[in-house]
Image (cartoon, rainbow, N blue to C red; front, side, top):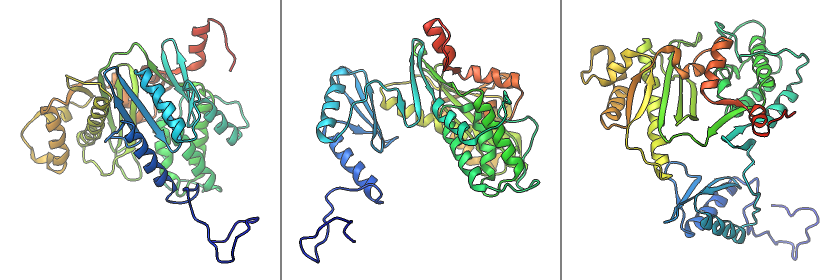
Length: 396
């Protein structure tokens, strides 16, 4: 280790003694988090077993919740006295600043409305569109064309694969508040190794769609009831390259969308029923995790969680105790879901395909169908919400 320029050593062989972990060192994040965890646990907080960045403290008055990401912290709860004491403790132990009411966190903009809380990434989306530098004013109303399949080798290779990867990565982060682009981003992410021009053209269409809906975000209504339900759907053999199916599910707490997923399955399914069943298994795991997490947050459920499925064959397999010959290859998933049904953690309910909200995560669709589904997911334009709140037009 060489002394930095301007550092005068008291003797030639003197070395630096590290008293604090520094940014850039591999062990710095772990050392920092270990210290923070020990300090916060000494103050009476317990670390969540389901999310290690979540710390909880309950009292006769209520609950105090602390969520940390590196050195950014969110504090909430219904115990004002404990929240005040916690902020004073953090200010004493660390050099931290109270930024007041939560309005911005890791690129997420938090809007406090009379109807609830809305999460958007308008600034992040605007920066992304500016970075691309679109030269036209074309507006599209869906992120991807319907009945279009993209292959691994198709036409002319794209001359800047690094740019393609960076833009896809940026869109992946944007899906935190934009589930309406999840399917399109999942498809385009499959070609980051070797993109072609047709893939880049499809990527630009997604960005054009984002440009026309930058102020859109997820609304969490304050008058929503506290019950958990899920929707699950699968596009059988949807990938033209591997013929693997696409899994899509979304979870609601009351009317508020709190979790969603769009992913290509890791195994090839021999039938649509098998694809749907694997999707149900993944969604069931998410339900179990959410129920346990909400239980730690003092939200208890006395009834099983309803999982809406549009495949009657998959429901019959889950409720039939007899293992048929044609389901042995998915026996693990069969046992897992059946045990959850018996334990009354979930209950399976058939839903018509037209009302299947998870369709948004498994396929491209028409403008009318796309707009219908995002309205059901409570994806709203925050400019419209503000106009309703203030009673006048607002230019953003």
